[in-house]
Image (spheres, rainbow, N blue to C red):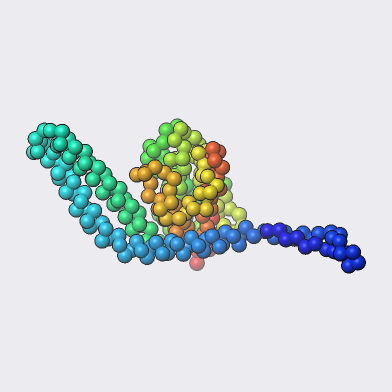
Length: 269
């Protein structure tokens, strides 16, 4: 933020010079955005906790009935006709959409669940290597090269290794999905200013500037219908925040995206 104060000559009233004062308000703006996101996440969490179980029960019934009828159609219980073929197509559609709804409700359940933390001193470098190994075994993308940039002698952090790994894998999976034609996925970590920094960097399609401020909002996604629920990054944000850390993103369209996790270095008492 820049403020300019014109200074005038007392006799003529003309502006003789201008005093310019600059103030870096980046941290203030980020804090305001973080508070807004936290409020939205809390509201969605309360809503999800109240309705997820009630929605899951009828979804389970719908999908079970659709599967049963689909099996009977495939066995020929209804004969063979164009109408039966249409029935089979409709049943497949009902089942797939029911499972998609269930995936959303499961994501909501994970989002709203109060996480029981099992914190201990963990090595971030080892955690990144094991996370990268799990991502590599998912076989989600072709021609993806995984690289590491891990500083030696990193201090350990007091955290729930399972939760932090969940966040890292979710970010890495998103990175792979952003490189449909292949690319490079980099896991980087270093320490500075009494915190450990973890970066997940890709060389993918990038995120449009107008979407950068929305990526951590529940249900926001740029993926095709059925390819994502828009809850993954919101869950990651919640995990990192609960650990007293911060999750940030920077991106250039056509160049790639970097998600950064900042975690405080804490002593083991």
